[in-house]
Length: 515
Image (cartoon, rainbow, N blue to C red; front, side, top):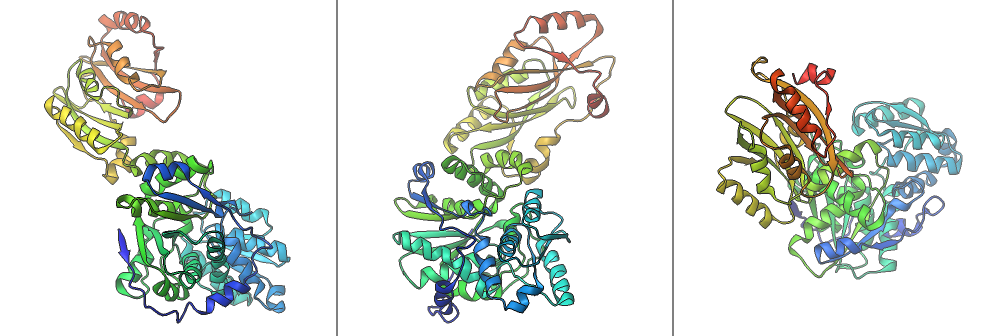
């Protein structure tokens, strides 16, 4: 979704930030980050794309700018007592790094959901860590309570004029290097970065448009713009933890209404696709919030060509355990992977006939479990180059009389079903003795159809699972209906194939969940 902001036309609230940004002291702990020309992204969307590389900061995000500038503004007495902050990670690292530089006592309250990489990084700077609450807002409440009890200064992650000014130095750097951009895109959590950068840019040039970008499940700015007041979200998605904020900052919202042209929302899948895009152009693994601005840039540029855009690559503190999810969902975010539920007749050769329709298209997943004696459903993941090629595939399925449903945008399918397809074989064990084998084959576009063709049509397949995650070899789990009289013949057949089959019929996992 894209929502235009009707700017007030005055700089009542943002005027003071010109002086504050000019006076901001950030370079003791931060660097002037470069701007990288995104070659691959430029070719992909037919617009010039540049990335402001805040992921190259010493703490791998822009947060050190605002945190240091705020802490420097404290009185000597406040510094001596120490400070406390609440953060899901990047602000915590910025505060801890600043305090280590200034030799100030520091405590950080972090949600229990904070990625371990961020917790460890904060500890490495010597800060005291307290894990409280499931969300950023719960951590804030705990930190404010401690600040009041101990009478120490709370360093707000975004809603503070010195923090905003520190982040605003990014806007100053952008225009010093190049003021010919058509639009600049920034991630939005609480709005400190967007407020600071837009305050500087909007008051120095009128030709550059500025857009904030939010994840759909944590779009507090979008809601504030709709109602023309700060709205507190009931629920906040935690995938992009760096922007998981339930309410836009007050100081920030005042500036945003004066200086920002619009807000764009993107899906988690689109964020994952942008993580991949940044990696392809920089070889840096961005965290989800760090790729948010680029996701918005891509969405904005779908019907626009020949323009010059810049996105803030705001952080690279990615949780390694999330990478498999990001990789999987990035294809959906690019609309390159489709998920189909296809009904097939329960008879030998049905798989092969279905796979022949796919031809050399890359199948990413193939899930099946026998349900009854007449029909079965197969869940298929398939990569398509264009929407036209997907329409052509659907046309072939219809012509071959295969009934199907497109589950590509079905959240239950994407989050759960594709990993849960299976169940127990309800057929009479005496009539249909099932044997389970695992196998593998070199990964290439027609590898699956070759496997099924070589397997042949003399035995009925009762279970099948194949998943392509980009490895050199694809792994397959296959259930074959057999009986004692033909078991030797089946074994001889499998040995005669070029694939290595290992029987897993007695495997406990199969016995407990699939038998």
